[in-house]
Image (spheres, rainbow, N blue to C red):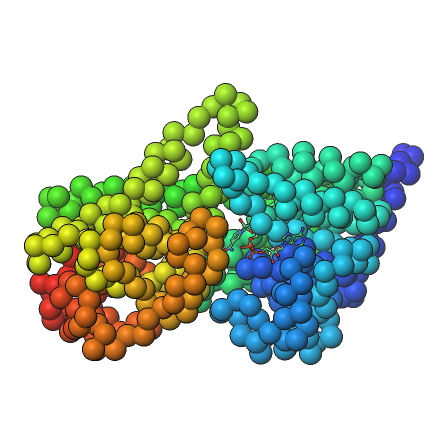
Length: 453
Ligand SMILES: NC(=O)c1ccc[n+]([C@@H]2O[C@H](COP(=O)([O-])OP(=O)(O)OC[C@H]3O[C@@H](n4cnc5c(N)ncnc54)[C@H](O)[C@@H]3O)[C@@H](O)[C@H]2O)c1
């Protein structure tokens, strides 16, 4: 049988890449050195591969070069260790894309004001890559997005160069499953989904990720991998909404949702616990499901579960405030206006400093608008950063907790259950504690003061 020269040359490129992996010569580029890109970088360096981090935020690049971390749970020492290996560099100069073999795109994918996918960061990065694209390049998108982004939007931009995917360069999608602050699962111990539309590309990208993760799960296309990521986050969003709705119903029936979940989760099959809260936050769960909603519209379809879950979760801040108002009325015959409230926990989840989309921000703003005298305490968030959706909260500072100060509040509203907060002091000194996270579960004294919301 005669060999096809095109196939031979692709096989040669593949073998060259696999050899570079084996000899630890494969140069990795990470575009976007944030919550996803930095831990990914650390994992590749730890595996002995050279990594260059690219970011258009000059401050981040400077901090990395000075061995300083900008992510709360990554210590400065970890960046110093990265620099000491001599395998790591970082830059804002995207012409360096030509010097790396692989480019992993970890840039933001937020929603626009009209809640549509904001693909501007992905497009900009793909355009920068296309300026430096060369034969043998491997490009992988890690940002969460709608099915069709990699094989449509990105491929189209990269192919404006005249190079063709599968022949000249390889393209894939591998979603990030990073769970910031999770001590049990790291990048390396979480199975990694990899999708590509051409089999050789898939083989190469799987081999690359096998350098850093224990288990790689290949799927048949980029779109399947994109849909897998969205499915995981939609599953969370819908189940959190379900448990939030059940919370409001059981509350009326005087049944404690937390006790129900604890009991239900003893079933060894067919049930998985989700927990109620003051709403949903973070960069993923409130946003990603709507990427599918937007894409489904193109097919004349609606995503009713997602819309309903969004509606229920969005209502939670108002529900929680209503519970707080009822508690104040019952205890002091007074309303929110003029009441002195401490909001405990500003980050969207426990033990992290991330306030993106945190429901605490909305709660804080509503309380202010309704005339409450409100402060907040969060050991991870000393000051509220500039956020264009919440200009009235700009620069607000976390207050320290002392017995004297706690005694001055009419109520404490627990929105995030950070471990390092002294909840027994809340129970001892505050007259009302409205608890949206069951943070007071271990405190048996002063039970009458605690209202679950
Ligand atoms: N944070 C998470 O826990 C998490 C988990 C899974 C998936 N994701 C997804 O991963 C992607 C990245 O999220 P993140 O949390 O790391 O965001 P991030 O904001 O922490 O980091 C993104 C980085 O990209 C940089 N950047 C922006 N435009 C750039 C460009 N054109 N070139 C180079 N760098 C650029 C930013 O300066 C920033 O440092 C998003 O799609 C997100 O949905 C995030």
